[in-house]
Image (cartoon, rainbow, N blue to C red; front, side):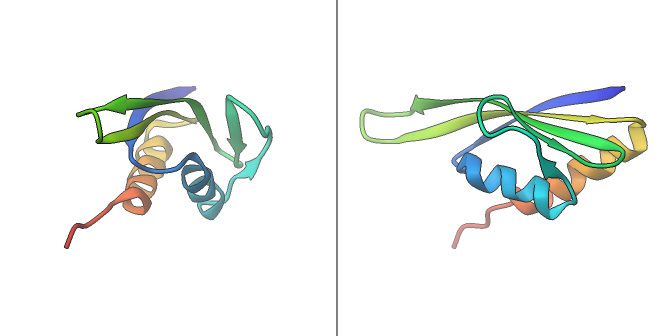
Length: 90
């Protein structure tokens, strides 16, 4: 089993879970670690914490794990997931 951990900042865990579902996974748990399973891969929302850049600027930091049967499947999953988490400023 191939796996890779990534960190996302400033995105609510509800949205991160929804992205797994949009990619075809089904939620398995409703508390940490949140687990989402699909046919050839699974995703985990492992932890969330708040980090401070200044006394008034705080964001969340979420650790997410991606697992797949093959490297190619893992790479494709992460590519598609990152596309959903892309934020473009204006």
